[in-house]
Length: 338
Image (spheres, rainbow, N blue to C red):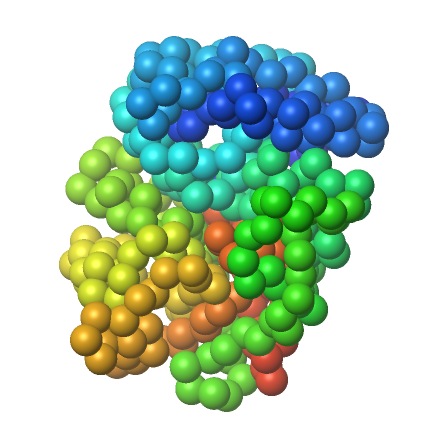
């Protein structure tokens, strides 16, 4: 059984940095995002970890975990958003109080995805892979990013539909601020390895593959136990985004997931657009996808709106999804099914 939090209007949002905090010269970005959310009627409370950064982390593992645990047990908060990702969130997992979590949304991507997936696998509480706090500072959001609020406000038993973006951002332009944070200039094209229409369904799980692969073999990455306890052995649709891996490292990661049983009863795998995927010799990203589909005999969808090449769909870990891709366009329907 999956437990779905519900985002209420004018609720309190907690901001904490379980991975990287924000350097002093960038504090205005956090304040800008908090102001935008307050304009929408939310109350925003920032923890101490948000404002510090040293040695690739916001604070000690203990302090980061304590602040996160406190916010997860705070009755007033419906949503926790880190300012952004980072590098070393995995350090705090053994200090997270999974047994006493309240059902509330945690939203983010990149390094945050290791926490999102661990929460859903351990507790059956749905989590949301989507925008981070820093990217909510614009005067307005593109249509794809803006869906985070509608998705998190979806009632239990209801469905929410999202569509592929019209255009995406090819590269970051931090020195060129604009009313919308992202500079969306390149036409979006969701692809299938077969080149044909693909429709698939199943429970949604995933995250940044650079990070979540490190859950394999730990108590926080027991996919088989999750299948038995929370989704009654229903099929799974995986989504991945690749931040830094070249093709052979990505291939090794996918093989390890397969050997660990993560792809048993898998109906489809989706890959986000990536700034990485550098070929090794002549081993390309398309070769990686082809090898995977040959082994698993399932459809592969790629260049979807997910990850470090924005904008991105808000994927809910644990929700029952139906994905439909045809002629470069995609639809994602998520059913908040227990």
